[in-house]
Image (tube, rainbow, N blue to C red; front, top):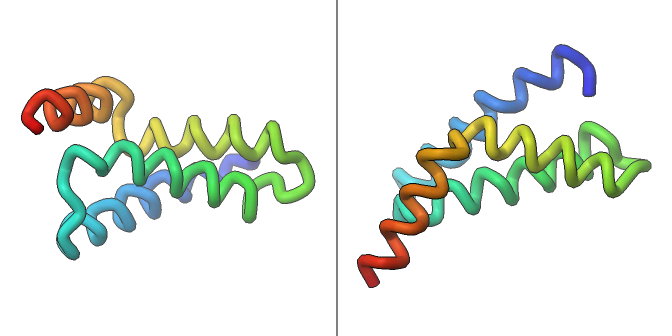
Length: 81
């Protein structure tokens, strides 16, 4: 991952916020952020190295959502069902 790839993190935040505006429940925002991170990691950051793409993408997705707040929101959402 190059230093300019860090700019992907605000992109993920923006895409998740857009999905929330379009009706995505808040409890799935962290999951979407992680999935977007992995997809971007596999497609853009390291397309020829799948394990590294997953690891880098997951770290970007979790950084975008905030690990603590993402887990907290998901757990609260599941408990509220």
